[in-house]
Figure 1: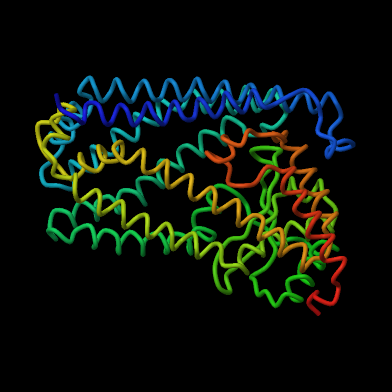
Figure 2: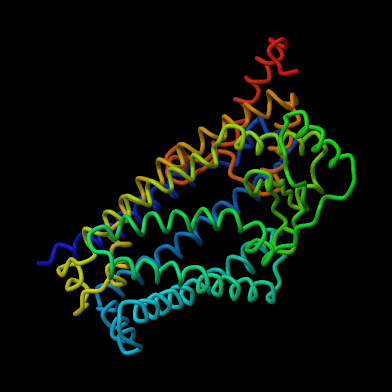
Amino acid sequence: MNPYLLIIPAALLGRYVLDLIADRLNLRQSGEELPSEFEGVYDVEKYRTSQRYLRDTTSFSTIEDTFQTAAALVFLLAGGMGFVDGLARSAGSGPIVPGLVFAAVLTLASQILRLPFSVYSTFVIEERYGFNKTTPKTFGLDLLKSLLLAALIGGPALAAILWFFDRTGALAWVYCWVAMSAFQCLLIFIAPYVIMPLFNKFEPLEDSELKDSIQDYAQAQNFRMRGVFKMDGSKRSTKSNAFFTGFGRSKRIVLLDTLIDRHTTDELVSIVAHEMGHYRKKHVPQAMFRAILFSGLMFFLLSLFIGNERLFSAFGMEHVSTYGGLFLFGFLYTPLAVVISLMEHAISRRHEYAADEYAVRTAGAPEAMITGLKKLCADNLSNLTPHPFKVALSYSHPPIIERIQAIRRLGAGSAQTPEEQPA
């Protein structure tokens, strides 16, 4: 028996079972009793609403994941890859045109399968809990723009990979690694100016106490930026957040309008200080560096399997091709992707603590930061008591109560040693 007929289904099912266990444990961890830390922020009924939101979103996610995993297994085991390969080869010759057609068919099929779940999540679940502000028009335009971007960005990237593997021999994976790394870096630089404005409006924050306070804080930290911007997040959801974009002098602070409407100036400055901490501690370039390393590992492993005839024959593909190997390897890569995800989430959670430490030390308002985080959790109906296994598997931020406790310890320490504070 072809071993890949066991390895790839086992990888997909293993990932599915892992997520299922994490979700079941997470639901079991939740309870009706409000944590004392959030008394006065949540009332009893709102906290119960947050628990219902957790149950509904988890159940729906499980249903979607079950369907998607089953669909992938049926597609693979029923020879779907060979069928799509036949369509692709009838569209043209050479490595690039069939490869682009092959990718387009699979991408569109995947989007069609996901569409009903996305619609239900947006217009039923999020609407039920008062989060949804997306209109059918905005939803449709977002989907169309995403598909166009996938074609305009993903198409040339895939064509380049196919060309390198067709023309450059044993070192093709190195050329792909270098080219894709440079391409990813370019996208990060142009995204704030070209891609993100396709989906949202970014307007300079109007003159106000908030703008002056943020600018004063940035100047005190000698942090150069292009400005403070407001994003119209309310056109899609009532949920709120803040983030930085850009590098070098192109750095800009972005606050969602929903965030500005619900928080005090001190709270928002503390939130901005946290985001600035990620930059000061070089978390973003570190993440880019790790992504580049993992990309190199992926391309190297891909080069080992891309011409494996048994891998192709296991799933009904009569012809060995770079594009077919690329997609089949994506399934084979699943276990390693899970391991890398665990590592990245652990690093991210540690970086969140470090950014909090920077915010407390430089903004000097730990209680304002705690209040701001509590409001964010309450407004977004966040889960206050996630299970440790769920946290390890999929949380990029520490559980909020642990984070608040760490901020309080930092605040107490800074209050005892004022001489160590920066001038």
